[in-house]
Every structure is written in structure tokens, then in C-alpha cells.
Picture 1 (spheres, rainbow, N blue to C red):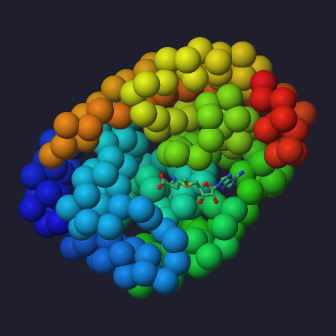
Picture 2 (picture 1 turned 135 degrees about the vertical axis):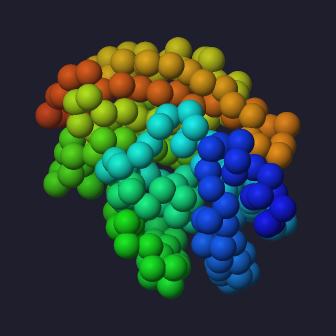
Length: 231
Ligand code: SAM
């Protein structure tokens, strides 16, 4: 794991000082994974590349310094937790609807002394009630198709902020299908950037959506409605 991080972090412009905390996070993840379902990736080198370096690729792609970030559907903390570890100037809200995953994150964030995180158990569409348009950036990886995801994430983002959707590279159709949702929710697709995860030959993609006007009050709808009739 250490070798993979030592090789990959400089490619992302990150200092090796964060390696011990990233290693501790991964060790805790793999340990807890034996008693609850947190990740299908269990080889420490793969955790380093496919979870940590993939999450941290956002630093180079999107310039994230000193921002208020929400990670929607963070699961075991990706991409939000590695970002909070590597960039102490960020404040990251780790949001998930599964209480056990948030309990794990609370425990490990406490143990690592990560004061720049808030671990919140809740559904994004409900969280938007009290946290509407307060975040500079929403990030999300592997949670839902883009039209649904836009309705969960864009209401949380300030006008002038961004939603960064982490996707696989075969998502042209999904991106095309999300155009109506993006525009209805006050966004604009600013860029679609493909990147290679350092130390691997895996290509992933980030869809960068700029928030250009407020989201109409009627969104987000209830989840059953969002799912039944995506915008
Ligand atoms: N982002 C993580 C990653 O890339 O490893 C976890 C992905 S996991 C496949 C999807 C996560 O999204 C689950 O932990 C699930 O509980 C959460 N989720 C799904 N819908 C959600 C919603 N409406 N609000 C908050 N969390 C949600």
C-alpha cells in the first residue's frame, strides 16, 4: 500500500505527509470489512489505487482547496474521507443513508483526529431541507445514474459552486440523458474529464457541473418520485 501511495501521490501534486493517515484509514476499513459490508476491494494495493488514489484524483482535476464539500452516498468514505485527510483546509460532510457506514466513519474520523469532517446519517433528498445551497462542492461516486444523482446533489450546491460526479468512462449515454435534469436543477455541464488512476491503467471520468442558478424549490422530490420519474 505504501509503495502505491508513494508512487501515486506525486502525480496528483500531493505531499507524502498524508500517507500514514491514509494507511490507518485503509487498515481500519479492511478490519471492519470483515464484520460488515464496506468494500468489495480487499487487496491493500487495490484499496490504495482504486479507492484512495481514485478519490484523490479530484484534487488535480478540480482544484479543491479551502471549500465546503458534501460527499453524497459516501459509503465507506469515498471520495470524501481521503480528500479530508489530504487537504486539511477542506471541510467535508460525509453523508450516507446507511447508519452503520456512518458509525464506522465517525469512529475512524474520531480516531484519526479528522476535525474537518462531519459524518451525517441521512438521505440526500431530505438533508437538502436544512442544507439547501450551502456547499461549494458536492461530490459523489457510484451512487445512482446521473439524472437521479443530479436531483440528489445539485440542490445542496451554492450558485457559483460545482457538482463533481465520478463515473466510469463509458457514460456518454448517461451524460446525454442527464441534460434536461442538469438544466432544470440550475446546472450546466462545464466539462467531462477522463483521467487515469495513478499506478493503474484504469480510466475513470468526472463530470463537472456548474451551478448557474438556484434550484427550483420543488426539487428534490421524494426519492420514490425521483426514481419513478427521473427528470
Ligand atoms: N461512494 C462510495 C464509493 O464510491 O465507494 C459508496 C458507493 S455505494 C455503492 C452507494 C452508497 O450510497 C451506499 O452507501 C448508499 O447507502 C448510499 N445512498 C444511496 N442513496 C442515497 C441517498 N439518497 N442519500 C444518501 N445516501 C445514499
